[in-house]
Image (cartoon, rainbow, N blue to C red):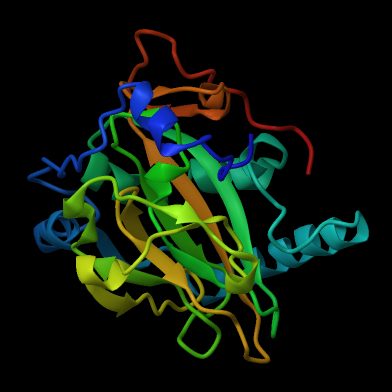
Length: 275
Protein backbone atom coordinates (compact mmCIF):
# COMPACT_ATOMS: atom_id res chain seq x y z
CA UNK A 1 0.00 0.00 0.00
CA UNK A 2 2.67 2.50 -0.99
CA UNK A 3 1.55 6.10 -1.38
CA UNK A 4 2.18 6.11 -5.09
CA UNK A 5 0.49 2.87 -6.10
CA UNK A 6 -0.71 3.51 -9.62
CA UNK A 7 -4.38 3.83 -10.43
CA UNK A 8 -4.57 1.75 -13.67
CA UNK A 9 -5.59 4.46 -16.14
CA UNK A 10 -7.54 7.69 -16.33
CA UNK A 11 -10.74 5.95 -17.44
CA UNK A 12 -10.51 3.88 -14.26
CA UNK A 13 -9.95 7.04 -12.21
CA UNK A 14 -13.12 8.60 -13.62
CA UNK A 15 -15.16 5.39 -13.56
CA UNK A 16 -15.34 5.32 -9.77
CA UNK A 17 -17.06 8.70 -9.83
CA UNK A 18 -14.36 10.60 -7.99
CA UNK A 19 -14.90 14.24 -7.09
CA UNK A 20 -11.71 15.81 -8.43
CA UNK A 21 -12.17 19.53 -7.98
CA UNK A 22 -10.53 21.77 -5.40
CA UNK A 23 -12.38 22.25 -2.11
CA UNK A 24 -11.12 25.53 -0.65
CA UNK A 25 -10.56 25.90 3.06
CA UNK A 26 -13.54 27.37 4.88
CA UNK A 27 -11.65 28.01 8.11
CA UNK A 28 -12.13 31.63 9.16
CA UNK A 29 -10.39 31.62 12.55
CA UNK A 30 -7.18 29.60 12.20
CA UNK A 31 -5.31 28.75 15.39
CA UNK A 32 -1.76 28.15 14.13
CA UNK A 33 -1.71 29.69 10.66
CA UNK A 34 -2.89 33.19 9.82
CA UNK A 35 -5.97 34.17 7.80
CA UNK A 36 -3.51 35.33 5.14
CA UNK A 37 -1.95 31.84 5.09
CA UNK A 38 -5.38 30.27 4.54
CA UNK A 39 -6.19 32.74 1.76
CA UNK A 40 -2.80 32.00 0.15
CA UNK A 41 -3.54 28.27 0.28
CA UNK A 42 -6.91 28.75 -1.39
CA UNK A 43 -5.46 30.98 -4.12
CA UNK A 44 -2.11 29.30 -4.78
CA UNK A 45 -2.60 25.73 -3.53
CA UNK A 46 0.11 25.76 -0.87
CA UNK A 47 1.42 27.55 2.19
CA UNK A 48 5.11 27.82 3.19
CA UNK A 49 7.37 28.02 5.13
CA UNK A 50 5.96 26.89 8.46
CA UNK A 51 8.38 26.37 11.35
CA UNK A 52 7.53 23.11 13.17
CA UNK A 53 10.75 22.08 14.95
CA UNK A 54 13.61 24.19 16.27
CA UNK A 55 17.28 23.47 15.56
CA UNK A 56 17.96 20.76 18.18
CA UNK A 57 14.63 19.05 17.42
CA UNK A 58 15.42 19.09 13.69
CA UNK A 59 18.89 17.66 14.37
CA UNK A 60 17.36 14.84 16.41
CA UNK A 61 14.84 14.09 13.65
CA UNK A 62 17.65 13.96 11.07
CA UNK A 63 19.59 11.52 13.25
CA UNK A 64 16.48 9.35 13.48
CA UNK A 65 16.08 9.31 9.71
CA UNK A 66 19.77 8.51 9.29
CA UNK A 67 19.19 5.33 11.31
CA UNK A 68 16.11 4.41 9.28
CA UNK A 69 18.01 4.99 6.03
CA UNK A 70 20.99 2.95 7.20
CA UNK A 71 18.64 0.08 7.99
CA UNK A 72 16.89 0.33 4.61
CA UNK A 73 20.19 0.29 2.70
CA UNK A 74 21.40 -2.69 4.76
CA UNK A 75 18.22 -4.53 3.73
CA UNK A 76 18.89 -3.86 0.05
CA UNK A 77 16.32 -1.10 -0.37
CA UNK A 78 16.90 2.42 -1.70
CA UNK A 79 16.53 5.89 -0.21
CA UNK A 80 12.94 6.27 -1.49
CA UNK A 81 11.65 3.04 0.02
CA UNK A 82 10.64 4.11 3.54
CA UNK A 83 6.93 4.38 2.84
CA UNK A 84 3.79 4.16 5.02
CA UNK A 85 6.23 4.56 7.88
CA UNK A 86 3.57 5.27 10.51
CA UNK A 87 2.39 1.65 10.27
CA UNK A 88 5.92 0.39 11.00
CA UNK A 89 7.64 2.86 13.30
CA UNK A 90 6.31 4.44 16.46
CA UNK A 91 8.16 7.69 15.91
CA UNK A 92 6.75 8.09 12.39
CA UNK A 93 3.27 7.60 13.87
CA UNK A 94 4.09 10.29 16.44
CA UNK A 95 5.12 12.69 13.67
CA UNK A 96 1.93 12.02 11.69
CA UNK A 97 -0.12 12.82 14.79
CA UNK A 98 2.13 15.59 16.14
CA UNK A 99 0.00 18.42 17.58
CA UNK A 100 2.03 21.21 15.95
CA UNK A 101 1.60 19.70 12.50
CA UNK A 102 -2.01 18.66 12.99
CA UNK A 103 -2.91 22.18 14.15
CA UNK A 104 -1.70 23.58 10.81
CA UNK A 105 -3.62 20.95 8.86
CA UNK A 106 -6.79 21.69 10.84
CA UNK A 107 -6.46 25.34 9.85
CA UNK A 108 -6.84 24.21 6.23
CA UNK A 109 -9.08 21.12 6.34
CA UNK A 110 -11.13 21.83 9.46
CA UNK A 111 -11.22 20.22 12.90
CA UNK A 112 -11.74 16.59 11.84
CA UNK A 113 -8.56 14.98 10.51
CA UNK A 114 -7.38 11.57 9.28
CA UNK A 115 -3.66 10.97 8.76
CA UNK A 116 -3.06 8.24 6.22
CA UNK A 117 0.39 8.61 4.64
CA UNK A 118 4.03 8.96 5.69
CA UNK A 119 6.88 8.61 3.21
CA UNK A 120 10.52 9.68 3.42
CA UNK A 121 11.58 11.11 0.06
CA UNK A 122 15.38 11.17 0.11
CA UNK A 123 17.40 12.37 -2.88
CA UNK A 124 20.95 11.27 -2.36
CA UNK A 125 23.80 13.46 -3.73
CA UNK A 126 24.08 13.10 -7.48
CA UNK A 127 21.37 10.42 -7.75
CA UNK A 128 20.21 11.78 -11.12
CA UNK A 129 16.50 11.22 -10.50
CA UNK A 130 13.90 13.90 -10.95
CA UNK A 131 10.18 14.09 -10.23
CA UNK A 132 8.11 15.20 -13.22
CA UNK A 133 5.23 17.65 -12.84
CA UNK A 134 2.31 15.69 -11.40
CA UNK A 135 -0.75 15.88 -9.17
CA UNK A 136 -0.96 13.63 -6.13
CA UNK A 137 -4.67 13.12 -6.82
CA UNK A 138 -3.75 11.08 -9.90
CA UNK A 139 -2.14 8.48 -7.65
CA UNK A 140 -4.51 8.45 -4.71
CA UNK A 141 -7.92 6.69 -4.89
CA UNK A 142 -9.62 9.21 -2.60
CA UNK A 143 -12.91 11.05 -3.10
CA UNK A 144 -13.77 13.84 -2.72
CA UNK A 145 -10.43 15.52 -3.40
CA UNK A 146 -9.83 16.95 0.06
CA UNK A 147 -6.30 15.87 0.89
CA UNK A 148 -3.11 17.74 1.70
CA UNK A 149 0.56 16.89 2.08
CA UNK A 150 2.78 18.32 4.77
CA UNK A 151 6.35 18.22 3.37
CA UNK A 152 8.59 18.33 6.44
CA UNK A 153 12.21 19.16 5.69
CA UNK A 154 14.67 16.72 7.28
CA UNK A 155 17.58 18.42 5.49
CA UNK A 156 17.78 21.99 4.25
CA UNK A 157 16.13 22.05 0.81
CA UNK A 158 17.03 24.66 -1.79
CA UNK A 159 17.60 24.98 -5.52
CA UNK A 160 21.12 23.56 -5.26
CA UNK A 161 19.97 20.17 -3.93
CA UNK A 162 16.73 20.06 -5.93
CA UNK A 163 14.01 21.35 -3.65
CA UNK A 164 10.42 20.70 -4.57
CA UNK A 165 8.77 23.16 -6.96
CA UNK A 166 5.11 24.20 -7.13
CA UNK A 167 3.06 25.59 -9.99
CA UNK A 168 1.08 28.14 -8.02
CA UNK A 169 -2.61 28.22 -8.91
CA UNK A 170 -2.55 25.01 -10.95
CA UNK A 171 -4.98 23.32 -8.54
CA UNK A 172 -7.82 25.44 -9.96
CA UNK A 173 -7.64 23.54 -13.27
CA UNK A 174 -8.98 20.33 -11.71
CA UNK A 175 -7.65 16.90 -12.57
CA UNK A 176 -5.26 17.11 -15.53
CA UNK A 177 -4.36 14.62 -18.24
CA UNK A 178 -1.08 12.79 -17.71
CA UNK A 179 1.00 10.29 -19.63
CA UNK A 180 3.33 7.52 -18.56
CA UNK A 181 6.86 8.81 -18.10
CA UNK A 182 9.59 7.55 -20.42
CA UNK A 183 12.87 6.02 -19.18
CA UNK A 184 14.72 9.03 -20.57
CA UNK A 185 13.00 11.29 -18.05
CA UNK A 186 14.60 9.48 -15.07
CA UNK A 187 11.39 10.12 -13.16
CA UNK A 188 11.24 8.77 -9.61
CA UNK A 189 7.48 8.33 -10.13
CA UNK A 190 5.86 7.32 -13.42
CA UNK A 191 3.47 10.11 -14.46
CA UNK A 192 4.18 13.31 -16.36
CA UNK A 193 1.86 16.21 -17.20
CA UNK A 194 2.77 17.72 -20.57
CA UNK A 195 3.37 21.48 -20.86
CA UNK A 196 2.58 21.84 -17.18
CA UNK A 197 3.99 25.37 -16.90
CA UNK A 198 0.93 26.75 -18.69
CA UNK A 199 -1.16 25.98 -15.60
CA UNK A 200 0.68 28.03 -12.97
CA UNK A 201 3.62 30.07 -11.78
CA UNK A 202 6.79 28.12 -10.78
CA UNK A 203 7.74 28.56 -7.12
CA UNK A 204 10.80 27.03 -5.46
CA UNK A 205 9.82 25.43 -2.15
CA UNK A 206 12.95 26.42 -0.23
CA UNK A 207 12.82 25.13 3.34
CA UNK A 208 15.19 24.90 6.29
CA UNK A 209 15.36 21.68 8.29
CA UNK A 210 12.42 21.60 10.70
CA UNK A 211 10.21 23.74 8.45
CA UNK A 212 7.36 22.41 6.34
CA UNK A 213 5.08 23.32 3.49
CA UNK A 214 1.51 22.12 3.00
CA UNK A 215 -0.03 21.67 -0.45
CA UNK A 216 -3.28 20.37 -1.89
CA UNK A 217 -3.47 17.08 -3.80
CA UNK A 218 -4.46 18.89 -7.02
CA UNK A 219 -1.43 21.21 -7.10
CA UNK A 220 1.11 20.45 -9.83
CA UNK A 221 4.53 19.95 -8.30
CA UNK A 222 7.84 18.22 -9.01
CA UNK A 223 11.58 18.59 -8.59
CA UNK A 224 14.79 18.41 -10.58
CA UNK A 225 17.58 15.88 -10.12
CA UNK A 226 19.90 16.46 -7.18
CA UNK A 227 23.27 17.01 -8.83
CA UNK A 228 24.82 18.55 -5.72
CA UNK A 229 27.03 16.99 -3.05
CA UNK A 230 24.27 17.45 -0.45
CA UNK A 231 21.44 15.09 0.45
CA UNK A 232 17.86 16.36 0.29
CA UNK A 233 15.38 14.50 2.45
CA UNK A 234 11.82 15.35 3.37
CA UNK A 235 9.10 13.46 5.20
CA UNK A 236 5.71 13.66 3.49
CA UNK A 237 2.76 13.41 5.86
CA UNK A 238 -0.64 12.99 4.20
CA UNK A 239 -3.99 14.09 5.62
CA UNK A 240 -7.66 14.15 4.70
CA UNK A 241 -11.02 14.34 6.46
CA UNK A 242 -13.11 11.44 7.81
CA UNK A 243 -15.89 11.93 5.24
CA UNK A 244 -13.47 11.16 2.37
CA UNK A 245 -13.64 7.61 1.03
CA UNK A 246 -10.60 5.57 0.00
CA UNK A 247 -10.65 2.74 -2.54
CA UNK A 248 -8.10 -0.07 -3.01
CA UNK A 249 -8.00 -0.70 0.78
CA UNK A 250 -6.21 2.59 1.39
CA UNK A 251 -8.59 3.20 4.30
CA UNK A 252 -6.60 0.55 6.18
CA UNK A 253 -3.74 2.98 6.82
CA UNK A 254 -5.86 5.93 7.95
CA UNK A 255 -5.45 7.11 11.56
CA UNK A 256 -8.33 9.11 13.01
CA UNK A 257 -6.49 11.99 14.67
CA UNK A 258 -9.38 14.28 15.56
CA UNK A 259 -13.14 14.30 15.18
CA UNK A 260 -15.31 11.25 14.52
CA UNK A 261 -15.66 8.67 11.77
CA UNK A 262 -19.32 7.72 12.10
CA UNK A 263 -19.14 5.27 9.21
CA UNK A 264 -16.02 3.63 10.61
CA UNK A 265 -14.51 3.79 7.14
CA UNK A 266 -10.94 4.42 8.30
CA UNK A 267 -9.25 1.48 10.03
CA UNK A 268 -7.53 3.66 12.66
CA UNK A 269 -4.56 1.34 13.30
CA UNK A 270 -2.79 1.67 16.66
CA UNK A 271 0.67 3.15 17.20
CA UNK A 272 3.36 0.58 16.37
CA UNK A 273 5.21 -0.72 19.40
CA UNK A 274 8.46 -1.33 17.50
CA UNK A 275 11.07 0.87 15.87
